[in-house]
Length: 215
Image 1 (cartoon, rainbow, N blue to C red):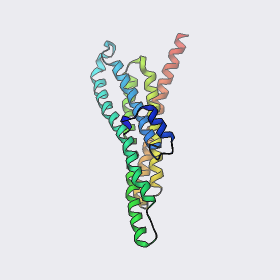
Image 2 (image 1 turned 45 degrees about the vertical axis):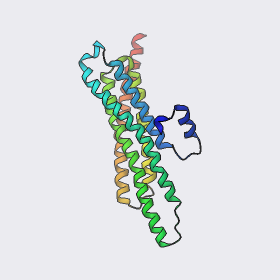
Image 3 (image 1 turned 90 degrees about the vertical axis):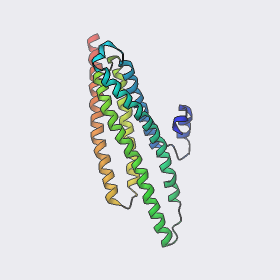
Image 4 (image 1 turned 30 degrees about the horizontal axis):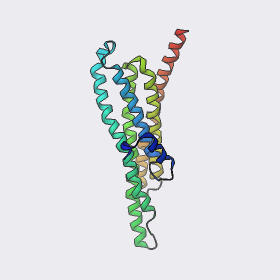
């Protein structure tokens, strides 16, 4: 669904009362944008004599980013697909013990499913940060600022996806599983934001240094 929408239609739907897309879908699209910027830098690097020694590696990274692009968009749709049955589960009757038990089982299953989608998104973001770090070091210096922009989109995608993990695990009855997911998500937030800030800071310093040299 998301891949067939133009940006205007996506934003219109996102801003409406429609239940999806929401923060999860927006996070996945943000990841796709950060990924696309990484691909742009790769394409601007490939074929340039200055970067010939790194071309094979850059081509491999580009191929992986192309795969990840599809995964980001797919995750936007999966987020919507996971939310629909969860929303329906909240409306199930619970007037007697049989209904209560059934509702709890359905809720638990769908809360887990709705948590696993953003966890997958966070994992893709972690991989993208590793790729963007290399692009910042070995990609075209003329496009290094675009690496920095891409990093910030991926950072937002990572931390945004975590919100969807926590809001769902908060309601899970299986606290052991919920805490496992929470701990895993927190580890990715800690490592991912640190890595993103390191990459961005390095690029920012290099750009400011360039400006000082010009002056």
